[in-house]
Length: 496
Ligand code: AMP
Ligand code: ZN
Image 1 (spheres, rainbow, N blue to C red):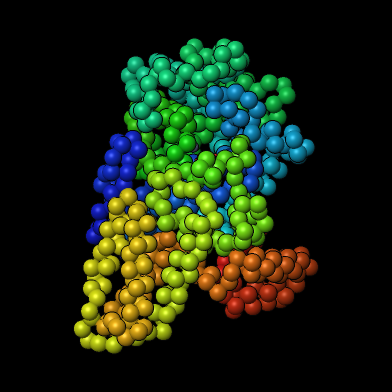
Image 2: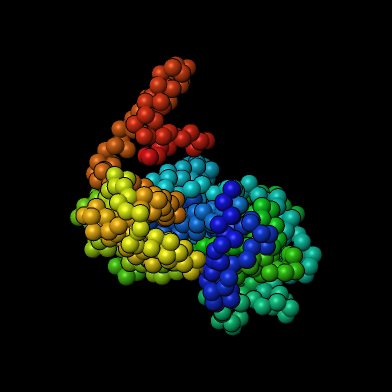
C-alpha cells in the first residue's frame, strides 16, 4: 500500500484563507472531498468539463499519494432556478415543459450525457454521486434545525435563511470577500423579494405554486428545496459536518458556496470545510464559456470536427492535454492555435513514451540525475497541483529519451526503468491522458461508432439470452485492448 503522502508535503491554494497552505487532512491518510456537480438540464459544454477535469486531476494525485479518498460529486436534479436570486423557473422543470417530457426524463438524458462525456475524457468516477432529489428528507431535516437555531424563518410556505441574523455571530461573505451591502440583488418587486426580511436572505425551501411540477411534501406545505441546501445535506451526510476539501468552479463562490458555509455553520456551529478549492473558467473568444450566452462548444463537436470554430477534429486526450497545460486556477482560452500546439506536444510525449519502451540501459553510471528529475515532478504537483510545471518536466524527460536514443546520453538499465515508470505514472495515472497517438480524431470518431455498433449487437444478443454471442463480443474486444464497462446507465468503453 502506497503511503507516498508521508514523503510529500502537498500545498494547496485555499480560497477561504486566500493563500497557499500545507495540506493536513483531518484524519491521517484519509481525505474527504466534495465537488459540486452539474445541473442536468442540458448537455455539458467544454467549460463544464474543464472544472470536472481539474478535480479529476486533483483526485488522481491524492490517490497517487496513497490517500484513501472519499470523493463525493453530486448531481443537481432539482432546485436550481434560472436566476441565482431564488427566482425564475426550475431549470429542469423548464426543460421538461419545453420538450414535453417528464422532469426525470430530462435528468436521465443529461446525466447519461454527462457520464459518457466524462468517460471520453478519461475521468474516474467519484466514490459517491448523490442526487438532490434522493436527499429531500435530509434537506428538510437540516432546514428544520436551522429554523430551530433561529437562523431561518418561514413565510407563506417558503423558508428563508436570515443572513443578517447569522452575520451577528458569524461572518457572511468570508469566502467571496463581499460586504453585506454589496450583496443586494436586483430583484425589487419579485415575489421572493417581497417575502424576504432582507434582500440578502436566500431560500432554503420554496413553496410550489400549483403549476410547479417538481414538488415534495414538507412541514411547510408542498414545495421544493433551494439550490444551496442540497450540497450541505449531501456533504454532511457522506463526509460529516467537518471535512477536508470542497471544490467547484470559480463562478460558484458566490452565492452558492457562501450560502453553503452559512447553512453548515448555522446547522453545526462551526466551519464545514478546511480547504476550499476553486477551478477557473474556460473561455472562448475571451469570454466565459456558458450555456446561457451560447458562447460554447460541446465536446462531441470537437471530437468530430463538426463545428464552426475549428478547422479540424481533436481527440479527447489532446483536449485534456490542452487543459492540463494550464494551472487549474488560471483562466484558459480555447483556440485553434492552442489546440494545435497541444496536439503537437501530446504526440511528442506519446512518441517518447513508446520509444523509451524499446530502449535499454547503456552504462553502469548514468549521466542524467533521474532522482533529481523525479523530485522536480513531485515538487510541481505538491505546489498546488502545478500541472504546467509538471508537463515542462515531462518534456525534459522527452529530451533525455531522444538523447538516449541517439546514444548521446548514458543511463543505467535501472534508471531507464525508473524514467519509464515515472513518465508513465505522471502521464497516464496523474494527468489522466490516454495513449491515442495512433488514432487521429477522425478515426477515433469512426472507431467509437464501430464499437457502439458492437455494443448494440451485444445488447441484442443479451436480450435474446444468447450469452455465448454477447460474451464473445466482449472478449474479442478485450483482446483488441477495448474494454467494455456495464453500468446502470448503459455500456461504455475504454481503450488501453
Ligand atoms: P452547472 O451545471 O451550470 O452548475 O455547472 C457545472 C460546473 O461547471 C460548475 O462547477 C461550474 O462552475 C462549471 N463551469 C461552468 N462554466 C464554466 C466554464 N466556462 N469554465 C469552467 N467551468 C465552468
Ligand atoms: Zn454545490
